[in-house]
Image 1 (tube, chains in turn orange, yellow):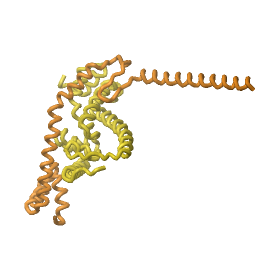
Image 2 (cartoon, chains in turn purple, brown; image 1 turned 120 degrees about the vertical axis):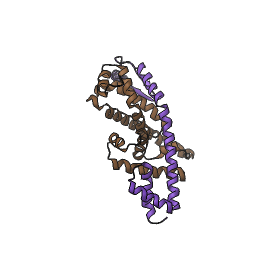
Image 3 (cartoon, chains in turn cyan, orange; image 1 turned 180 degrees about the horizontal axis):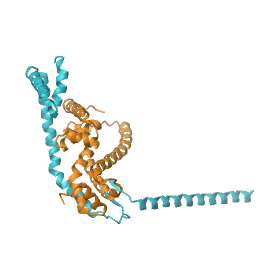
Image 4 (tube, one colour; image 1 turned 180 degrees about the vertical axis):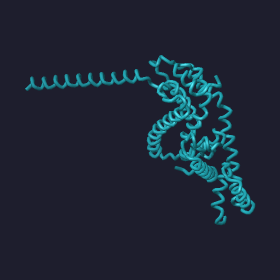
Length: 132
Length: 174
């Protein structure tokens, strides 16, 4: 590996991405004919590019059925009936009404807790006062 | 309905027209999925979140200002939902790591391509995934990610380099 190799390897990555100009491509190809290390690196990147392309092509072939799944879920979605809570995948979409109801319930529970606790403490204090 | 612009389909969707929104799904789902896969690096999560994004888009379409901006808006929704999930996962991971360190477990190595893609940093994984979902057009990726062409080019180069290292040298134990 000589001093040009680092620069050439940058070029190899661009060559695989298809973003290298014609003049630069010629310079890189010339270097590859002379340098086995860079030539090996280029071969590996090209092989990885093919693996990546095949990997992502799998999604392309399933894209239509994935879209259909969304459309099926869409069909089950109520447009005006947003009172309903529905779950899709791992995310749960909770309508505003449900959030408000939950907040109100929390406030009621906390208030009841404090009232009961306060009453209980008052009764204890009363008992202590009577016994003294 | 195939010939209708996004603008018309968005207006119809606002009135609850599911067929119109289904057309928007057919047009934009692939890009939403690509963004989700690029950010999350996990196919199952990407599928779940992409579906949620599209459905949330239908329910929230009334909030979209400028019907012609649907493509940008839906990608923004996708990005936000993915980042929410990552935040939740980060918390869960921190908790799991504590447990693993207590029991002496180590993270397992993953040498396959999907695993290596998942291990790339998000900022370079996203352009790499988008590259394959946008017919390898740097211009379209740049538009969708709102970065320059040379920015996309640099990130793709970095992604190739790091992916090669992950695939050849193997993933280091965490």
